[in-house]
Image (tube, rainbow, N blue to C red; front, top):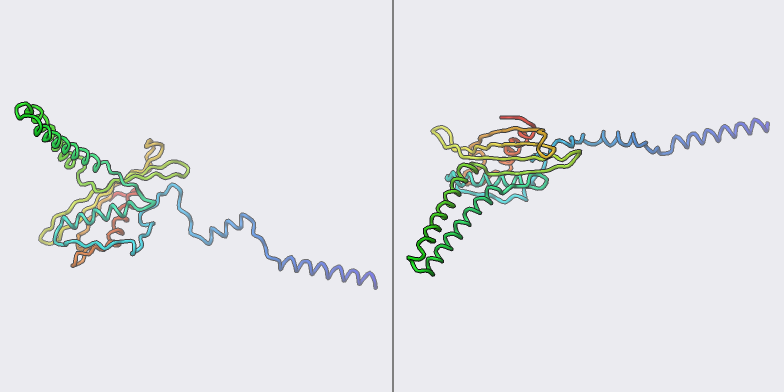
Length: 254
């Protein structure tokens, strides 16, 4: 009887121990933890895939109301150009390049200084004695003014935005983007339209390796973005611009 009672007691103790082990909370292994996290969250994007403008939301309260004269095509275009610059220059997107603006400002201010210096010299020096310098200043002023006009027409053209972005993952990836815009005149059947072209290049290894290159183009009439009072639907405009940019980033050409 003593031995049988000891066996029963030992068996009961083992059963209680097994039940406590089964009831105890389990600590997942690192592999199980990683699989559960990945199952509960969306699949992360590839590190080489750049962040597109549609991935970064803009809250309505962050926008200021834009209102223009919707009968003036120049005001409509300028409002769209400014919206493009604001939209693409947001944090985590592109850094705007002001090359064309800097060149035009340099030429413009140089011509102003030449004109001011020539006028001051002619004021202080007798007319006959100052003639050679005044003529030189006049010629230099004319050259600078003509260069500024030619640069704006032939080099800058219809470009409204130039941007650059560098991202770091396994390698340094450089993106360059250029947007050009113009107004398509109205016809008997269609109102004036905003024509936007996107040029996009993505490279690595200091530009030696080309990863993607594309050009997209879209046209929308201004009345699709401005109501009868001239108030701009910025969210709709940004959605359209974002789609064109992301198509170019994906290598699509339209």
